[in-house]
Image (cartoon, rainbow, N blue to C red; front, side, top):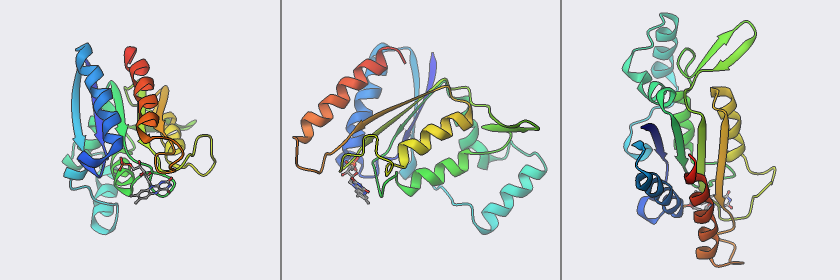
Length: 196
Ligand SMILES: Cc1cc2nc3c(=O)[nH]c(=O)nc-3n(C[C@H](O)[C@H](O)[C@H](O)COP(=O)(O)O)c2cc1C
């Protein structure tokens, strides 16, 4: 059984088109039956930004190497997963700040990455990370797109070999029927989940 961590940042929940992609992805995995899926809904978590006392506590725990503190549970969960699936819409050229706050909690020296004389190295178990997103405009290969490119870089940082983006672009442009755009992403999902 592969342990899949599904990180749900589909803020509009049932109205979210990104969630439709995630539902298809997870449905396909469930059909295959060889996956243990954990659904982490970021909207239901009480995630804190690194400010004031919350930041200070982290520094003190890291200095004492107390990595078993409950506040590091997100980092351990991420580090232990065999596969990572992230779903989030395209907001303000990237993704919602809620996902960044989560990633800030996940990025912990000694858990998801390590530090050697030669530099930083990733320590996550997962071999693959998938990012599912939908965008109002078309940002394919655009330097203005900062969400997916950031996550791809983060994969390398965390030591995750393969990054896969499945994006439905141009949903709000009115140039093409949104259902047709979404269908193409569903087809891409069917291919990726064949061998995930
Ligand atoms: C707060 C907010 C910010 C957005 N920013 C952008 C943007 O910068 N560029 C863009 O093309 N679309 C933008 N959109 C449109 C969304 O990317 C698009 O509607 C997407 O499909 C929404 O995903 P959802 O249905 O999963 O919520 C934004 C939408 C919202 C609500």
